[in-house]
Amino acid sequence: MITKQKGTYDISGDDAKKREYVNEIIRGICEKYNYNYIETPVFEASELFHRSVGETSDVVKKETYDFLDRGERNLTLRPEGTAGVARWFIENKLYGNMTEPVKVFYNEKMYRYERPQSGRNREFTQFGVEFIGSDDVMADVDVISLAYQTYSLLGLDTVIKINSLGDTESRDNYRKALVDYLAPHIDELCEDCKERLNKNPLRVLDCKIDGDSDIIASAPKTTQYLNQESLDRYNKLKDYLDLLEIPYEEDDRLVRGLDYYNHIVFEIYADIPNVGHLALGGGGRYNGLIKKLDGPDMPAVGFAMGYDRTMLAIEEAGNNIPIKKDIDAYVMYVSDSEKETAAFITQNLRLNGFTTETDYLNKGLKGEFKSADRFNAKYLVILNDEDLAKNEVNVKDNVTKEEEKVNINDLIDYLDMHD
Image (tube, rainbow, N blue to C red; front, side, top):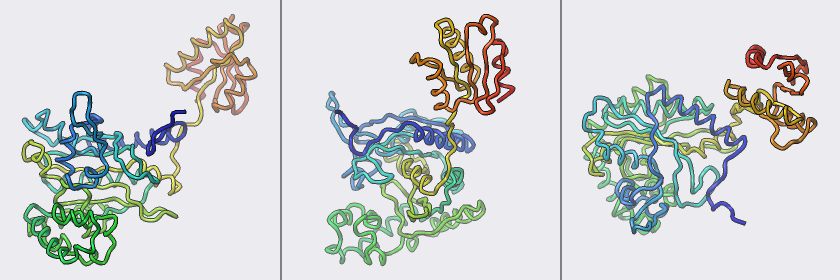
């Protein structure tokens, strides 16, 4: 028997309905914030992710699905959404005549080869937004606000953790201070961190092995090395968050796991009973990424949330996701002549907005009654040849059990009136 691959999953039934409900929330709030939907290819040239995410990142070194296609091209299954959006922006030369920032959102499958665990799989869905073309702090706030309000609409009590990496000058100064501090402790670091110290020392701060050590706890803080311009920008962001009543906490060890961030970085957490502090998503500003990918020097900021982790948080928090578990009508028949009319009425009801089912297994009237109950049908539309000769059907309210003869031409109006 062929089974699904480790770290993948099937979604169906009520789980699928719940995800569709969350999708509607996401699409609705993105529409209110004026973000347009985008889809990018599920695989791209490997170079795109190696150059954007960073050769030293765990994503590129350990987690990407890389392969050669039949044309001997190096390709990678999409591990995150920002790089593909940046490539799309550059390839289509959207920078050529920009009168407004480009604001897009995606909600797509991503792939990372990592150890599957609760809320984290090798194939996973990621919702994210990208705001390209503004270096104003208001753009950062727009993205953070959208993220926070999305979780609020999903019934999750969240807090934003924020930090600033500063501009290039600030980041370079901090990088030097961090290397000077860590170098004497190199033998106490894990093998990955020993390599990171030379290539990207900021990675040491979010190491899964060394991250909680006393060495990291005593390391220099990014905010200590912000120049005045970067510090002013960071303070302005906090002013806006206070103004909009978006709760946040400062976390001076927060650096995020990808190479392209600068200035503001943030992560969103929810406190879930019996689970604890659960990371749901995050993002930040990446002003240098588009230029790094051979585009213009273009400011940008974005956010992404782990869809599976969010669904887990909603479930563990005991939040009720309203899903439709009934249908409007079940059309019942016995004879072949009734069956033809049943097919016509079923389609007509559907085309007029009623969720409708009928029998496809020739169960007979007794079996159809059982099916109608399984579907939680509000109304039964019962056909028989005698009524059809008068152009009528018998409509039964499955709650009150009241029945009434209704002319077929009046059936839509009747159900509309009683709905």
